[in-house]
Structures are given as C-alpha cells and as structure tokens.
Length: 514
Image (cartoon, rainbow, N blue to C red):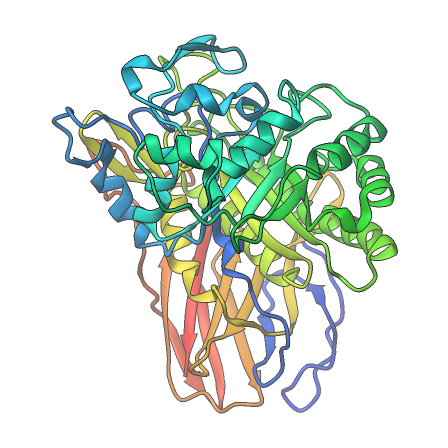
C-alpha cells in the first residue's frame, strides 16, 4: 500500500508532538501514553446495546416463551443472558429504532393471550404478537443488571400515551396507571434512567423538519415526569450521520430542556456482502469508520456553542456496520454475518467514543441478536458469539476508567488520494492504577511494529490479548462457533522502560500494563 512520508520529531526517546502524526512505510509506530494524567471518565454506558423489534433480535434472540425447550427464565433464554452478562452490559435500548414510533405500549401488557397483534410495517410487514412488552423488557434488564433506555413514540403517539407509560413504570403511589401495573403482576415500580423522546423523527419517526420536531419535543417532554424519586434523563432525537443542520436547530430550539442529544452513524452505507469482499472493500470500511471522528468533532463544536458548560450529553444510540441480508434470509429482517472486518471497525468506534468521552456519555451498538452488527447469532437452541462480541469483551476494561491522553506517530495507508492512520488507539487507567491500551491495526496485510512509552509511571509488566486471523473474512458459524476468538498477544516485551510490541495485521489488541 502507498504510504505518506512525514518527518517525526524524536527527542531523547520521548516524542514531542500532539495528536496523531503519519509517517513513512516500514517505520516503527511510536505511542506515548501520558499515564499519570487524565481527568475524564469513560462512562460505562459507552458500551451500551440496542434491541429492536426487528427480525429475530427479540423473538428467538431474547424471547422463546416459558414453554420452550430452550432453557429460559420466565421466557427469556438463559444462554443469551449469560453471554451478555460477561460483557458487563451497562444499558439496553428498546423497543426501537423505527419500531418505537409505531409502538403502543398498552398493547404489550396484561395476559399475553389477550394482547392484540399488529403489523411491523417497517421491518418485513411481519406480525408482531406483543408477547414481549414492558414487563418482559424490564425483567430482562434486571436479569442483565443493566439500566433501561426506553424510546418513546412521538411519530404516531400522543403526549398522554407517553405520560401514562412513564407513570405505569415508575410511580410508587396510588393511581390508575400504577394500579394497572400492580394488576399485571408488578407491585414495585421500576427505575427508568433514560427515556428517548422519539427516534429518527427526520425519517421513519414522522419525516419531520428539525423545527417541527423541536416544538413537538418541548410538548412531549413536559409530560415525561420523574415520579417517586426516579430521575429520568430525557433524550432528544438528533441527526443521522452528518446532518449538522438538524443538530444546530435542535440545540438552538430545545437547549437545556434535554439531558442528551442522540446521534446515529452506520457504516459503510453502501451495503455489499458481509463475508465476500476484497481488500479495497476492507479499506473502505476502515475509511468510513474513521469518518466518525470528523462527525463527532463537528457535533461537539455545535453543542459547545449552545451548551458551553457541557451539561447536555451526546448519545450515539445507534451505530454499526450495515450489509446486505445473508443469502436465504428474509429481506428486511437485516440478518447478517459478522467477520473480523466488523470487529476491527467496532474497535475503531469504541476507541473514538473513549477519546470523546467528555461529551459522549452513551453509545448503543445495533443490535444485540441476529440483526446488523450483532453480538450474538442464534439458530433454535444453538448460539454463537460474533467477533464484535469479543471486541466488547476485550474492551470492557475501559468501563468507568480514566481516559489517558496520548501522542501517536503511525504509518499511513492511502485510499482515493486521502491518507489514513494504520493504527487507531485509546488508553485508560483503572481505579487500581492499571493502564489498558486498545489498538486496532487497520492494515489487512502488514504487522505493525510499535514502540510505546508511558509518561509518569514505570512499566514492570505487560500482557495482552489479540483478535486476528489469517483471512479478512474470518467469522464464526454454527458448525465452527470458535473459529475466531481472542488469543494471547505474543511478541511483546519491556525494553529500556518501553513496550515493544508487534501487532498482527488486521487485528484488535488490548494490552494491560502494570
């Protein structure tokens, strides 16, 4: 691959530069981690997830029913819950997505045999049984030990409907909605920390202008009240990708009436096969993934104008890769495989979220099971973990840790006359003083030699885990469920106080330094 030639400044073995600098082919990549600095916390919710009534995410993914032969607790399959708990899953967003703005919550409570059916108009025109509703979702969140993030219906709903739902879930006193909840088997109210006022209202949520949505938000938000000591963080619908006009209007018109603004960012946006691709298509995804950096930077600039004190959080509550459906699967149900390419993309996203944790307080990958960039794929009683799952498991060490600033000199690759870094990095320090460095080698062919210095601490040991494979499209199948999983990082040592590491081509690496 063509490389960029730049001069790197090296002074007495410690590099005096800021940010990321690119260098010539074959040079040693150099990383300086300021291990004694850092003030911002990487919010655990950055490692959040998203479950929509779409395809087999809910039904067959989470919900099998109490009478199923698949092991379950109150209808929720236990193998999926156990796998997600290993990720320390912090928050789960539900019921959509586009489904949220056609969902009427009262159809999903009470005896299941009496719940009305509906047509899922956005996703395959399939019949939605409403067997999985409010009680089932919040039961799932309690099983997972995670926060609930509910997306409310603005597109086809009413303020009264939204008000009643919040009261039903969270009010501890004597009221019609609270007593209805008790009649349906739940005496104690739930804790609902996050509530979205609509979803993608510029498109499937009502095809609105930002001005019109802003007025609707102000109206609906009034009726999303915090009952019985429960404090709800209200989330306004933000843009899809690079619609910065939407961001500016919503920030200007809504301002401090929201606690957070959402952002959706899918890559690469052109479809294609999830498993059949060439090197140029690999690099196209890396380019699209790195493009998030500019989107976050511009979004933060706009938010800083209207919220200079940083009180409004940014939630990237839908993100991930989007490929064509797998051959043989039903169209519009968005079932796709998940390869090493998706895993490296996920590593880039998570590194960028970590780096922007001063404003980015939550992110929710789309989606948990059987849809888009899933953590888990199921087939009847069978379940496999995807490469993206393994990246989340490796990166969970960053949850709640202190973000560490760093400087990086890295080799570059070129695509369409634009240059991109070979390495993508984030670093943190946990409460015990242990430093974790996560790195992605975007080069599909060439290992990366890395020399890493830590400013402020003396490294005495380094260990690491790596996710990589010989083939770009390596993935797990029901016949070979462990084809791709993390292994121990080799070729790493401490020499003259620095970490000397060789990162395999097309890899995700997490190092632990003590």
